[in-house]
Length: 252
Image (cartoon, rainbow, N blue to C red; front, side):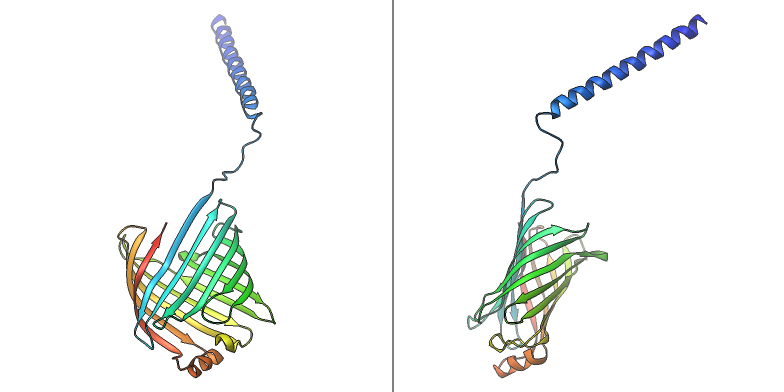
């Protein structure tokens, strides 16, 4: 009996000691946290930029240089995006120049909602648009985006994009990609027709010398449709082209 009593007293002492320690830690934690308030989410600001296409397209109706890039700055929840694309032909004329600024916020694990503005700045007349879209990773890690645009004078437009990185080795990557543009009404000054306007697709093979520096080669296919094709042919240009391309993909 005496041994049992001693054991009970020992267990009780340990329990009281643990309870006192827990109470002391809780009090210390409350005191330490009091000057700063409750814990908050990480609000560190990150910056990222990517030129997915810096390339020359050779052959077809004319040789052109094309760029497509984007950059963002912000936290895990709120970001400012800038996107730019366009091409310059051998005569110095700039076409398909689209410059966009978005506020971006995640709406799920894999997709972000983006709202902002777009301005068409190239050798043609400028056009301003309000923009709302979604961008992210679809199943099997396809990168996709869909954006709708509202302009003045009853102009509406939409752009759909998709791409996928298929690793052959850790450094050799094949990237198929496609972009489709649609418009609600004709815009002859910019040689754009209503409906499905154009398709820009490509297949590129890049070698990542480093993750941030990857030269590539590939093939691109451009096709104009409907009234857009008619406007382009009337200007003496081809409505479809297959070109060899070589360029550089880089990011920071």
